[in-house]
Length: 287
Ligand code: AG3
Figure (cartoon, rainbow, N blue to C red):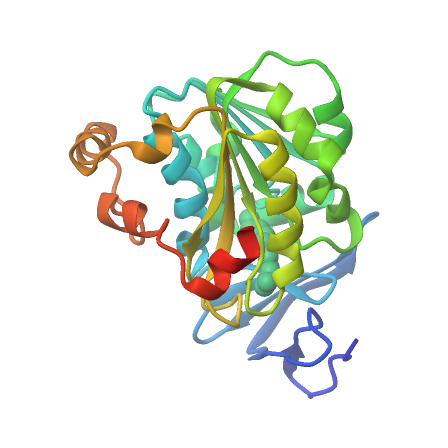
């Protein structure tokens, strides 16, 4: 793995043959939690940037392209989601988007690293934007894989807001984990997952899709595009207990979006439908 060796720049350590570098205009935090190395710095283009073990997790500038698509696509496709589970997502950005839906009356968020939550509140307050004070949020500090293996009241939507499958995030990409997710979904429930950038990490998507094929009547992925996750579009896994959610027609979707009364900067009902159109090189990873 490359090491950050350019003075004043963070060189990402995710791939061994390619790296993006971000200029550090001001370092706000650099420390190790019990689980991982946490850094936040300011970059002129992206705003505050959060890295875990040298990998960009989120930036103030483009986080909406990720959080909106992982939250609003399943919730609006479902149409009546009341209980949502977020695995990971310690920065609070995912729970924030989920709870913008007044129709969602409960969101459990399971984060392994209390350090990420505390620290994000302080250094990335725009991400959570007050969501940690929302009475509908149930924050659980625990290992997401262990939580999934237990019994819980079922969820309409489960969102896996994980790191890549290295370090503590690895268990969130296993067949066992996905099997438990399926068990915890309601009849029309939907599981969505972050599955990396397929051009750079084809195996990450391939592995999840192989597992989803065996578990979900409707399985596949849809796309978003996040500049700080370099290398092309990012794949978001989709595993649904019925085909209803994917098939939702654009007029219905438009109605639900309007009724939700939310404003978005990436998500639109048209982008939602279009996100399921896959370039052939990505579709090939699904079979
Ligand atoms: N977690 C997803 C990080 C994935 C980075 N992967 C990549 N660059 N290929 C984001 C956490 C935000 N809540």
